[in-house]
Structure formats: C-alpha cells, structure tokens
Amino acid sequence: MTGVARIPRSRGGVSGVLLILLGAWGGLVPFVGPYFHYAYTYANAPDKAWHYTSGRLWLSIVPGAAALIGGLLVVLATHRAVGVLGALLGALGGAWFIVGASVIKLAVTSGSISPGVPLSGATGPLNSATRQFLESLGFFTGTGVLIVFLAALALGRFSVVGVRDAALAEELSMEYPATSEQLTEEVSPPATTGEFPIAGSQYPASHQAETAQQEYPTATSPFRRTPPADPGPLRGPG
Image (cartoon, rainbow, N blue to C red; front, side, top):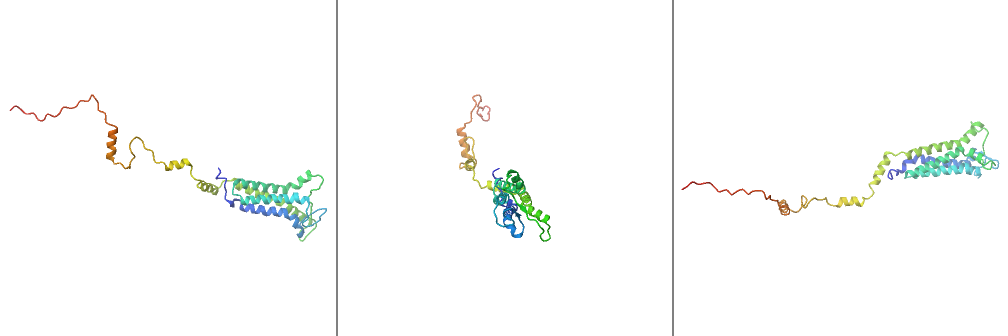
C-alpha cells in the first residue's frame, strides 16, 4: 500500500496549473479590473484599482490564495495524500468564491465586509444588465465554479490507482535491499540428510559405498544355516 501511494508528478499537472491561474485571477481581478472598467465599486473607493478593503481580502484574496496553494500542491505532488490535500484546499477556495458573500452578509451584520456592487451602465455592445452579470460571474460565481470543477477532477485522479501507479510501486519495491532472512536463504548451502555426502562431492562412489558398509554393517541372522561345502564328484570303489 505504501508503494501505491507514490504517484508520478505529472498526475495533476494540467488541473494544478489551471487552479494556479484561476486562483491568481480571483485574487488579483479586484485590483486590476478597474483598469479595464471591469470592477466592483465601494462606497469609499468607486472603481479604483489597487485599493485594499476588507471585502477584497476575505472574498477575493483569501479564496484565491487557497486555490493557488492547492494548485501548487497538486502540481508538485509525488504522494497521493499531498495531491488529495491540494485538491481539497482548492475546492474550499472555489466554494468560498461562490458562497462567501452570502455567508459574510449573514455573519457580519454591520456591513464592514462587503464585496461591493458591480459597475453598471452600458459599455460597447453590452447593456448594463449583461455587464453586471459578467462582472459577478468573473469575480465570484464563475471563477468559483471552475475552481471547484478542476479541484474535483484532480481529486478523482488522485483517488484512482492507475497502471502507472502500480508500475511505479513495483519499481520502488525492487529498490529495497533484501532482508537478512532472504540473504541467509540465498547464501546457505542446501541441506543434506544422513551421514552420506551429497552428490558431486570430492569422494568417489566406491569410497562412499565402502564408508557406508563400515558404518552400517549388514546384520547376519543367527538362525540362518550355512550350506555344506561341495564334496565334489563321487567316485566308486576301485
């Protein structure tokens, strides 16, 4: 199981890079969007770039950083647990992009933390309603949905044991040295039985047979009668 936990570094490459880009987009768009008249306005900072507010911190920077760090973990992961952790962190950041404004509105009733209001008014071929829809989509909802999708995709890839994972586990298992018991079994000679030397030893077969006869003499039964000697051919009288 430990070997299977090791994964190729390329496992979460594409999804991790996209998580990094989306996290950077979600965290920076409130600060650079006003340059392109794509922004959320605030009471104290209407359509102003690089202006820090608590709403931009908790609703853009924090979830964007979570998605970016999660993407880095997904890209650099060589262990399954690290990749899963990065995917979960990215998913939490994406979910906060989607529901963070509603949760903050209920938790902080003073209104000190607010996402602001999307810019209104027609611009180019876009009317006011379409412009506000695209701003809310790019700042929060759409970015969060894409991050959650990519994080779920990465989580699924890290949860499945593929053929490459099994091959990597087998390769790693071959790198470990043999145990002392295995080395003893490989070095020790084959066992022999009895007092006789093994086949192919330095003693010839005749010597082995003579030694066996000396060490194990054949027992003679006391009830066995010795046949009389042959008297030879009988001859008649003279």
